[in-house]
Picture 1 (cartoon, one colour):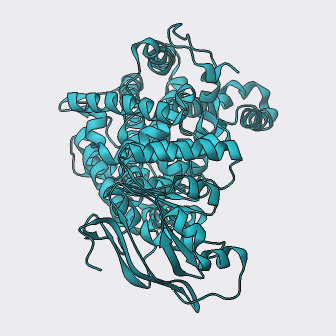
Picture 2: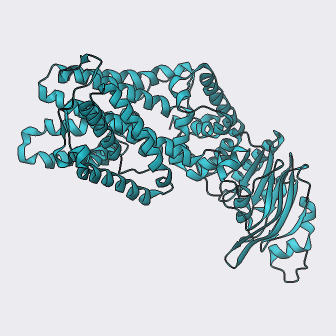
Picture 3: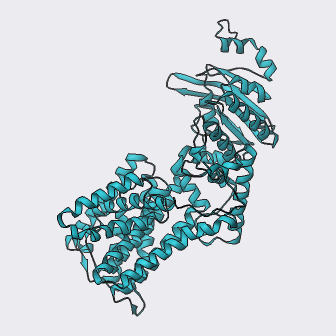
Length: 330
Length: 262
């Protein structure tokens, strides 16, 4: 949203400069750490992309989907098969897989999104289960439980990102691009329509917003992100199996979304980092690790119900003296 | 009927049956361009059903709704809205997580354009449009007297102001016809007076208003013409003075027994 010049500076600082600096700092930290930390932060970046997409559908638009892992699987297997078996350029495989996932999302979403609330949740959950079963049973294509290994790393033409650290730089670039798109779309006519649907579908309808169409668009955007994350996972790890895109992924991503701050642009990134890094910090506690981890999660949800990104919003912004806001004085 | 070229909205023989219940029975009236028209009736008279039919919430069993010369009967609600027939709800339906100003900005949806590409690449026209949305939102908030609350969360407003916000949001859609569903419901006397003032000023801006209302004080104060519905049938239509003196209306409201067929 275009804002008067007086307030845009602080909003810019808080909404863009600060988080981007934080992400780059984490990346630099990872690049100077051991291989294991690089792997964990790489996973965090991939999950952050996935959850940023989920946030379009669940956060901005206020709909429930328990089946986004289906689109991550499409991306992952698409990339694995196209670049592994058919020697496609990995970036091309990624883009083609995304397009395919988007088309599938549009076809599947059209009837499914007529459902609401719990029914929508169940239907999308089934979507995830179906994809999971297919990835197990269609062994000719997916090798079933065995999974697909030897997937080449990301690269363009003859240039290959051989090391994990190089990959991490690429993942960070993808992530920042993903969050940039999310921010842009959120603060636009398109994003306002989505957030209106989350607030009240009848009111959105009454203002001329085609609710069904906007829901479908949010679903497709979420699927594109999920597919991209799936592809990146395949290239980052070099191996995928049905379990990678199983039910655990859904639970993991929900935790990240709610912990980081649903409906916020940076919440998914914070949530992904938090959920994947916290166990590493708690490793020293040995058998108490899971207990403390769960306690921390519950505490955050109690004391920061809008997620960790919501806490950042509590930092007072510098208000321009020329524009007093009496409404906020209380 | 054939008067649709004269009237902005023409309700023609609308009948609505829910199973055996006839909620609306051959209701007809015309709302001329620029009018401030009210539909009143006792509780359960079928006002809200009629309202929902006009706004496209559900189609009637029989009859037609003609808006700006086109039959809109059975069109989905967003399609009706995009033609410029904008409704509000009896129970305020705000976008709670948005600020007051953003709520009004959503209202601009109908009169703006642009999807994902415009949002990503913000070409010149899109930036200009966003600036215009901002300006227009603030102007409309000032118009209903909520200018100072623009950056508040919408659900922090007191109920009476939420109503005004809903009106501002509907105005942002640049309605040809504004449909207000019992806007005074749940408001105290002062809030109702403030609302009456806003409704009259909305009409003075050139917006045709159709008010469906239970609160007689509001209707008698603002409406230029009134249709009265009782048990699903239109029993009278006229100016406020005519309606006040109409025997059937008095009977309907005071529970008289000797109703003559109109």
